[in-house]
Image (cartoon, rainbow, N blue to C red; front, side, top):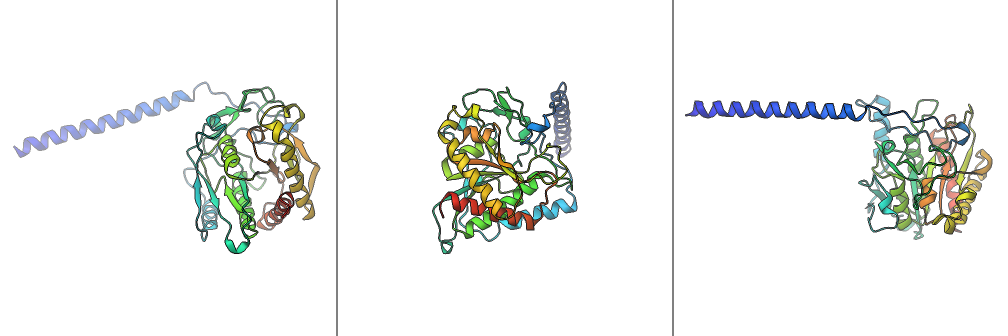
Length: 335
């Protein structure tokens, strides 16, 4: 009897192994078929580049020693903070239904009471850093209308990448790592100055697309500052800082029509704060580009471009940039 039972156990086990192997083969075949016929993105005109070409966030199989050290540093940055609150996208919020990637969470850092807490929440958005974001599309505008300027998505398009992959600095550092480090330094300065901080991306990856990040800010923060470095400008030197302003053709579309002047005021104050720190300012300090962020924003909101691929992104420089941004924030909120 025992021999018979063992015989049947062996038969069942072999059958299950075969099923699993067959299923894995089907999944591999399906994955291969799904990539057939995909065409590469068309290049974006360099003179219109402010957001980065649509590239996918890489997920390396094995991290290099430098990458591991960077990740460890990022993880250590949140140590010591208490009473943190995870903020997820509420499906009842206005425009929340336009988001396609929203399983992640922002993190709200309350300012310590001894800092003279102001009761003002600054939304800090470390640009990029959403794996798979380039493969997903969201509406450029909440009303479904087409883009009025170029950028990472051409003028006339009605959908854009949910989150582009970002550029790479000349020394090989991915932009998403620098924007996160910049956000951490700015966060610390804001907290010690009494501001609460909403970190839209608080780690290497967050599954929140640009629409979700904007909608969360609309409902939790008092302003929204996205951090980026420009790319594709054809320049082999540090071009300096500027903010993305709203183009004239977009100023009659809601919610832009009701808020673009707030966006411009915030952007101008931030640029002037950077100028006080001796930071190079590009051109007039702003450039009119049609962005998903400002198209969905119902609070003061800007995309700050803090340089380009040739900019120094050492901690010394990031500290200087953060001080300038803090000065601009103080000016805007009359602190």
